Image 1 (cartoon, rainbow, N blue to C red):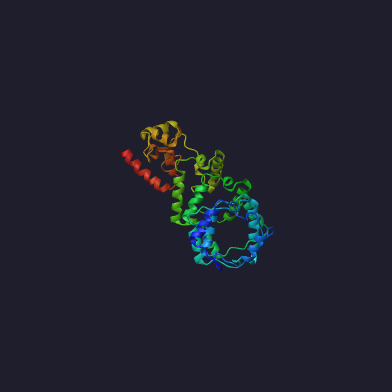
Image 2: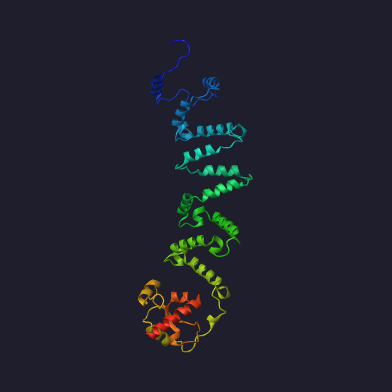
Length: 352
């Protein structure tokens, strides 16, 4: 070889690479502490910078590999991580007291889009927990809070949350009863006194309408047991609702007139006569007995005899009308409208 600086050609490098492929390197397992040659090389190479091409080749060689796979040993990998951690800790870190620019943030965001992040190992999570223990967290800035709200309200994020939480209890979501209980208590405290009132008062008419429609679609043709997933929860819910709407708390409270007794002539014979007179159908929805049995999934207590003027003592035939249980419940509200509605229908029916 001629004296002076010798630069290898690309072909030469490729031939050397092929010749060495699969063979162990001469310095495998050696460190500068135990081998003089490695120590000399380390001193000689200090300050030498890799070319961009060299950096790319290293990056491709290490791609999708852990340090254990690169160094063929867990112990070496751990040692290497510790050394790197010491070198880049605190003020030694080249990014110490610096922040990413908006441009770099966007570039990082675009680069990581669509990529699935590997979940942390249990050991990693424990280490993070230990490192954070006792440290006071800095309060979020207004801008940070705004960014977090915007991120949480993105449709794709909400969709993922709904899919993850679907048909799961808090215990299943958070992995333990203690965590679930803490979350429930926090939510209860944060919501206390803030969400009183109707949907319209809380969200406005348009949003309230949307919420009501969504709830209606989810609950359609379902019993409380099916909605809440257990008979105990369903019974508890019914009991609470009953207590909230009992007596003077009820929106339709009229001084307790519902407790007044009916007249003696309002008996089963009279009810049967009204049922036959109205051809065994509900005078509002026009459904017959068989149709209502299928709809309500029961055989008894399908029809009620309704007093048009809401006076229990007025049991004349022209004041009575046959209704199904659902329509009878509806007629308890907006009484002036229904009294007028039935009076017109009844006059027409009697005239026929």
